[in-house]
Amino acid sequence: MTLDAEIASHDERDPLQGFRGAFQLRDGLIYLDGNSLGAAPKVTAARLAETVCEQWGEGLITSWLGAQWSIAPQRIGDKIATIIGADPGEVIAADSTSVNLFKALCAALSLRPGRSVILSEQTNFPTDVYMMQGIEGFSGGRIKALAVAPETVLDRLDEDVAVLLLTQVHYKSGLVRDMAEVTRQAHDKGVLVVWDLSHSAGAIPVDLNAAHADFAVGCGYKYLNGGPGAPAFLFVAERHQDARPVLSGWFGHASPFAFEDDYRPASGITRFLCGTPPVLGLVALKAGVDLLCRADMDEVRAKSLRLGELFIERMEQRCGEFGFRLISPREPERRGSQVAYAHPHGYEIVQALKACDVIGDFRAPDILRFGLTPLYLRHADVVEAVERIREVCATRAWDKPQYRERAAVT
Image 1: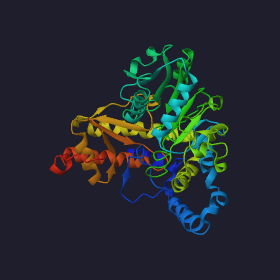
Image 2 (image 1 turned 90 degrees about the horizontal axis):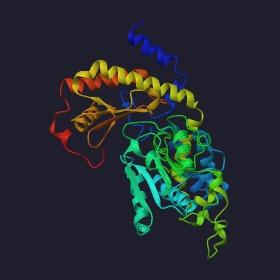
Image 3 (image 1 turned 135 degrees about the horizontal axis):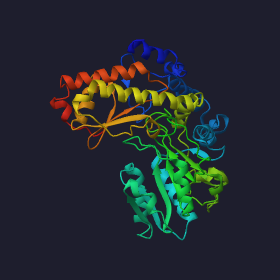
């Protein structure tokens, strides 16, 4: 069997092939940035139109009950729970990842009142560390934000640490941490763990309850395909839901429409809501989540691994002479659904590739990231993407002034 026939056979036998047609992707485009912004499901526009024209336009305020807007965070949270190994009533879709990180960190701190350190790793996604630093500043230094070298983070666990904040799949390298083992080691030291699942949820199998996880957050616009700025999600294990939220907003009140002067937290996960649900964002998020709920996550992961191996093999064969250095783990099981390379001209190459209809992204200082989204990426797309990368490098198409000018968003 020729290589082309083998690739075609993979795509023909792909159990996920039917999902590609559910997304809005123009011909010729190879989209390798679903790990930053997922493609738009075709049903999203119609669902938004129905919400705007009928539920809002005709139903107006009655749609808070009639269209169940008021409980959308819980309804969609329960759907996300099935993707990340949580139980009904343990997940809400609300706010942003950063806000949910603040909620989770403060809740964890309240459950460990004798401890004062929030621990994370250096090179973690910046907003995670920024939220830690914000809490430290607001506390007047009573709470300490500490980020240490990734390889030493578990050695730093001690009786001063209240909460450990880690990203399961690293946003640059794609390295996957062993959630169950890390959580076990943290619990052995009396430390609670907040997991950032932004590059995990919808990309790899996640089982929060099997890992005895405490808290988790994640965004809705990557592998969940909820659209730009989609609401994020927050997981709080049932055993921790008595924690009193620091962001005590009216939708987290036990009786929000009683308009009481004093805050009484709602029971369960609802107490971790804050303000009015962003209905249009939740409608778009639900469209993406509904698609993913139809997929078998084991099949998603199996295809992701095949795509990653194919990408790396083809890069070695076709682009080995151009100075790319793989920074993602070479072992497939240690790698999320992306492949990342370092290159001195990484920024320029990413810009030149966009002109060739290959969309990846760049992360400072020199990282090219290529997201492998199994629901809509084909094996043939990976092969063609590498050929276009080779062409850009062989012809030095990246070496133009317009590709060196740094944009505000990379």
